[in-house]
Length: 398
Ligand code: DSN
Image 1 (cartoon, helix red, strand yellow):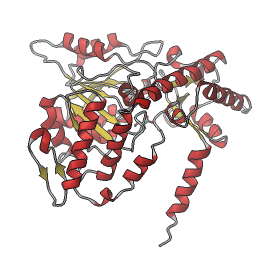
Image 2 (cartoon, rainbow, N blue to C red):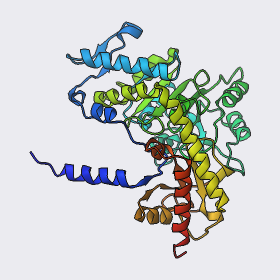
Image 3 (tube, rainbow, N blue to C red):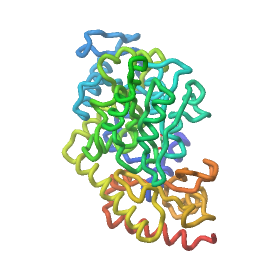
């Protein structure tokens, strides 16, 4: 049977081939991952867990799961190798949001306090937005960035002492600098007292997971209690999530995913996640991660050279934020995003620290280099793209 859907797929393929893709959370998966995600594993129900080798326990709710069991265990083993860790891993979260939901649910109760990074300062919807489950179910408190845009670790310590959160959450969607996981661990331990045991340290490493895997950003393993991620950003895998935790939290985390918040896992996506891990373990991957950062620095420096205001004045990772309010007071992030769309350059509007506009308008844009690095772009290509964006802005009627 013919399907109209293939027309949409063909148009989207054309767009992806043609456009300059600068959305910091997107990437291009390999043919193998595409094949796995489009495979017959999509037909299989596998509620429960295999874990025959790791725990001796098997708890699937359907027959015929023998190959899915092998796949899921293979996938879990690979992810432990990627991060060189003995943490438990759950590969079933359908997304980063589901992973965060389960992470919170596994160790705290609704009404408990979570301290997270302020959303305007680069946090994420599931880190306490009032319109998200996190903001509705938990008492959210926030730490922020200093006047230069860097995480204010002193503010974090002050807020831990003041609010005594049950979870301290680190991780961001639009933060361009190294996150000092070792310092946060130290702060958390320092704040613990006899009547306030150390809160859980949860890291959402979704944006930088690929850089950590490739050795281009410090790792939270060994420091955090629970680590969540998506697999489709710098990791360059299928859309989905993962949760890692200290072994003693394994049952709580697993229970929070299934049956706590999800039904059957998406086995075809788990197949894609396994290939993503195989790729992350390949020798080329280290080079890819290093190139993503090198390209990001080159493009960011070009914008600075042309007079743009970059939040924090630079980048250590795969992205940076242009604060347009300082240089182009009448140009919003939304206007620039829409103008660039017309020129086949894709990026997204983004709030900046101290944002004065609504999230639907914003005063900034976020620029990321992971996707075009996958397409083979080098520093010179990114510098060219920065110049092209500048020329487009100069041609706008502002
Ligand atoms: N929406 C993603 C991003 O663009 O950063 C985060 O989940």
